[in-house]
Length: 177
Image (cartoon, rainbow, N blue to C red; front, side, top):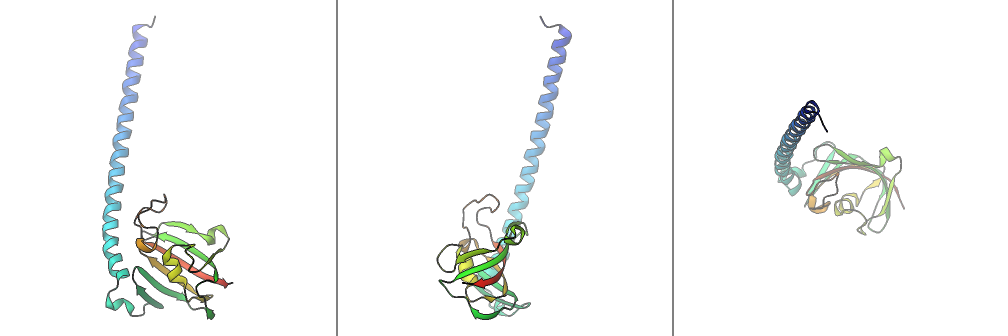
């Protein structure tokens, strides 16, 4: 038989555990709500900015540092000029890249893996924004591609890439095969 002191100890222990659990749940739920609110606010702000940047204000065709052009869901900035001929559809591109969300959070990088990435341009092996944004690059050229969700992963949830994300890639063409 359990003594009354032991019963009290067990009851007090259960109450403490429930109180701590409730407190943790409240903080976690509050923290999640705050993060969700912040993410929604940021998403709304970047949607407005993205719609302006990507979908084409007449002034966006003016060269920025060093060069920039915009077309239907894709903004291309040339960060470093390349040399030689331009890559065309059907050729294999060997690139180094880093990919970030519009918030700046990096989700992928061939630089960090230490292995360049290869794909056949124009064959749908990569997102459409890449097929469009890499077309015409020269070896050694580096571009920043700002890609709308429609030319990226759309409404798919890829874990590190939330649905309807605008993506920013810095891509350097290393070789044309």
